[in-house]
Image (cartoon, rainbow, N blue to C red; front, side, top):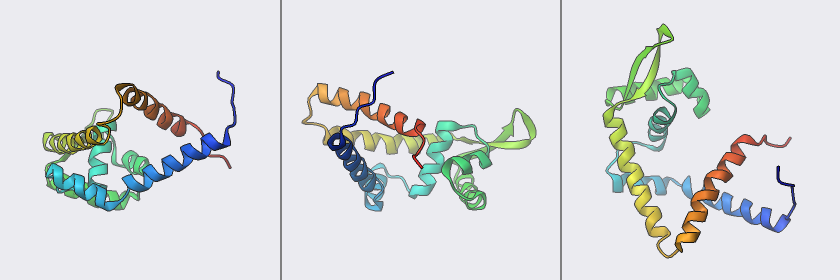
Length: 156
């Protein structure tokens, strides 16, 4: 295991970069622009629901609510709309015939693919003048950073 070193200037720079990225990525205007470019009519919360079901599904709605940190009754209303739109389906839970799980339908997968395609094109444009080495380094370190954050308990 690597030895911990403390470089306050480096940590401050990582922190500031992360905060700036989170602020930028969570701006409604960013989602709106991506949504329009992809021709997708889902709001941010509906997109997040479909994306999480695709990532973790089939999944029970209570587990999805916990994953998204939302109230189950709020999620239930949003899911009803996504089912009505033909993006998500409720299927029988193979482990418990009385329960249901959520899965993404082909129309939902299509929306995710279009949205992600626009994202990739945007990233490609943003990184066009980066060297291949720098792009590869970012591609290696960013997921590693997210994994480290997600597995490290918040101090307190």
